[in-house]
Length: 388
Image (tube, helix red, strand yellow):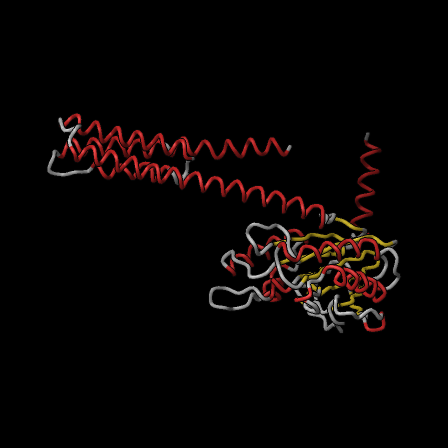
């Protein structure tokens, strides 16, 4: 399926190019005809260089070179019609068009080579994202989930922000984190923490014990791989969340991470006050130093986890993105639709340029179907069977 999509994409790019190719050809014909019609007193031949310059905008080096040859032929045709094809002016103009076309072709080659290199980098980054940060399922128990990752670096699809989720018996545990730094240099710590969470979340009964286990993993990693000139400067802010299937509650342990937004079905937005411990990586391995905050989380509620790249995003005037205010407009949306709205609004606010990586994770506890509606569906189903 992937290769098929690639072939369609190539076809979609080629069809517009064939139509656009008529533009420089028509320009050459019009400029040549106008140069012939105006006589020797008005010289329009040098304008022919516009044709290969325009072609380079949408075509490759070979097509650009071909249009350049046609431009030179147009200038030579003008000289032949005027009987001055071997004159100094015509020869110099043809040579000038050839030189400028050659320069444009070289620039096309460099541009296309850079584009291929960028495509390979993005392919590697995408593969790394799929290996390191597994896609989250849309359903886990009674929860509906959606996630968005926006890398601040154009050549990367993953960086220092991370999220993961796992089922532990009759509960769901979720982690979101933000490594100090951004882009690909922060990928090592992100990969370590994701792997440690996936293993440790099944071995520790409480969130403080889980946080302490993650701290020990970070401490061992930094002892082996942290550069001496960055000692004590590498850490990860983390929020651990546990949602039991049968309890309308959510338990959270924050390690220096910003609190989530709790969106109610009645268009309310709550910013809970948490009791955060220091970030992971600073050596706090005692579970007693990690508090558990408990909040109501009933059917229809949505928990919106995020990294600080969202709230620290600015527009061209330096105004921060009003995250809670904007999210309040879409509290009735399903998780995927909610994040789509926020993503578009955030990019519009920043003009498409992010100063830091952004991760968003929406968790919605599915509403309980109305008993009466369920009974009516069952009755209609029995009626249908009887009719058959």
